[in-house]
Image 1 (tube, rainbow, N blue to C red):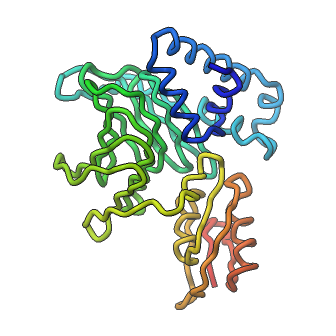
Image 2 (image 1 turned 90 degrees about the vertical axis):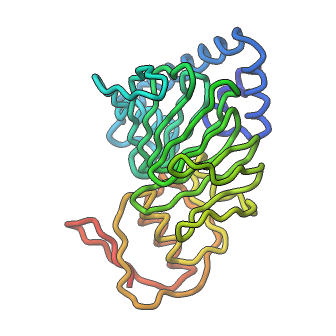
Image 3 (image 1 turned 60 degrees about the vertical axis):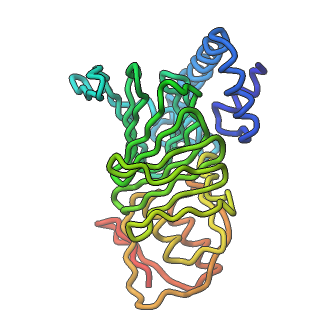
Length: 305
């Protein structure tokens, strides 16, 4: 396997087709898996030993968003000592917890070589080693999964609003409990969606399932721009201002209060970099949609007028 391709994979710059090639290569042999892990360790070591990162942790350059994510992963990886969760097989699993800061994202490789990207303001719990029967993780936020295939050991993503079960596939889950929103989008393979232990549906590639008014709605994925967050981009396609403001609240962990009784009904299409921050996004939006805003310096709240 080409090292340059693997490094682009670690950086989140590979296409879905390239990721498929890498996963197929991984499934071919144990030797390939070991090579993958060693290359990942080498890549991480290059990031963590960078003097620039060490000397500028308080103010990292905008041109190194993935180094920021790597440092955040180290700082915020909490090994939860003494916390054990048990599945139906009574097999003890010690869980780790990752808290992703607002405006950041983190990439990690799980014990089964599954690749996970975590979006901003996300909490993710995963075991150091999976049990004999299941691969269970817990999500509050948004994540993209490229799951290693293992039909004998299902991979389960548990959220407060619904669960997703797969054996090996590529999919996105958005489940911020604070906003009472659940959506899973499938790009490859197949997933089953559950709620309270009851299977609700199975998705096909390029389909997504969204809870709307306690009903699960299945629809086709028309535009993939919203999934560019893995590249540090927040993208909107013909989106109303209120929906955009909700996304900014999620990703930057800010309270946005709308003072105006009637927001402009214009829509916006464009992209922002998470590293640019919420104020930059709002200033760009003002050029296309007429509104004003002020930020309370004491509370950090943003008021739209």
